[in-house]
Structure formats: structure tokens, C-alpha cells
Image 1 (cartoon, rainbow, N blue to C red):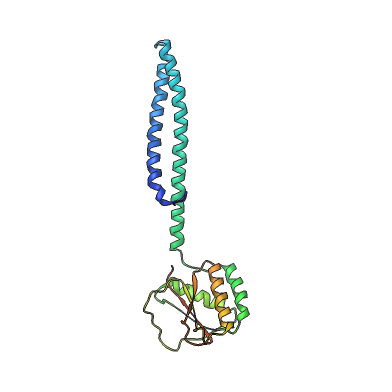
Image 2: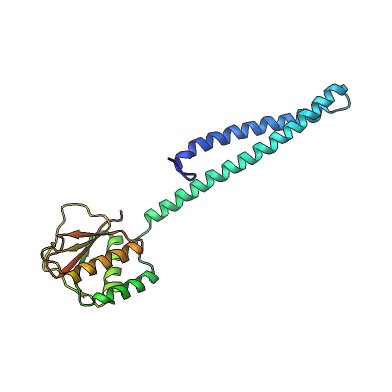
Length: 214
């Protein structure tokens, strides 16, 4: 069901605006005719018809003026929302400074947690977000970065941030709690993140991969 700001309403609103605009023109013509018919050169009966036409046309003129302006405002609001949504969609993912500070405090409870982090290094947006997570959040939380031992490859496209943890049989409760805290903190900061069981390469390590923006 379309909302009041749904772009699917635009064709209907544009059509309604056209109808209201034409009706406004017709009402304006009615006002002009009514004024003319009120002239002293016409019989009294026609003058009275002119007065009624004038009053009626003025009412419709006012009504359709309001409808045109309201519809135009509605169309503008939808277009503004569409532009804002597009700008948000194209904007780079960044953790706000206030969220960085609170996230670092939250994750400091898991100080000493080992982790690895990587991204699509050919994508500047993903690289910058990975750097922010690593240096502004995890490093300040006391987490321990473990450099990769070799080249890593992916055979699929990853969207959002994947927090990889070892299989349930090898993971500790502390590691799981740390991964959950990181996932919740990132999502609270409007960064899409999920936990990916089986992604980690070591039983005591979290592997973070920053993919493309969802």
C-alpha cells in the first residue's frame, strides 16, 4: 500500500494537478464572464445571473487554487524525500563520532579479543570504513589485530559487514559475546552488520569483512 510520500503516487498527483489547473482556468473565465454580465448594459436578470456566476466562480477559483498549491506541495515533498533517500543511498558509510566513542567503550569489555579485518581493497568506501572500524574502534578497545598469513579470496559478493566467528563447536562464550556486541554496535550506528558462523579461520579469532554498501 503506497504511503503519502510514495513515488508511485507521483503520476496520479501530476494528473490531479493538471485537472485542478484546468478547472482553475475555467473558474477564472467564469469570474471574468460574471463581471462582464454584471454590467449596466445588460438586463437585470442577466446581471443577477452574472452575480451568481461571479460568486460561484470565485468559490471554485479559490478551491482549485488551494488544490493546485496543495498538490504541488505534495509532489515537491515526495521529490525531496526521493532525493534525500538517493543521497543517503550514495553516501559513504561512516560511524558517527558519538557512536565511535560509545562503541569503543562497549567493546573494551572484551579487550584482548583477537581479530582480523579485510575489505574489497579496490573499493575506497569499503576501505575507509574498514580503517575506521580497525583504528577508531577496535584498536581503542584493546582488541588485538592479527595480520593475515596469506592472500584471501572470495568467490561471492559480500554486502554490509560480516563478523565471522568459528563454528559453534570451537567458539568460546566470550568470543560470541564480543561478536554480538560488535554487531549490535555497528547496526545501532546504522552500519549493516551480520554475524557469519564459520567465517573465522581460528577458534579464538573474529574475522571481519567489510563488503559493498547494501
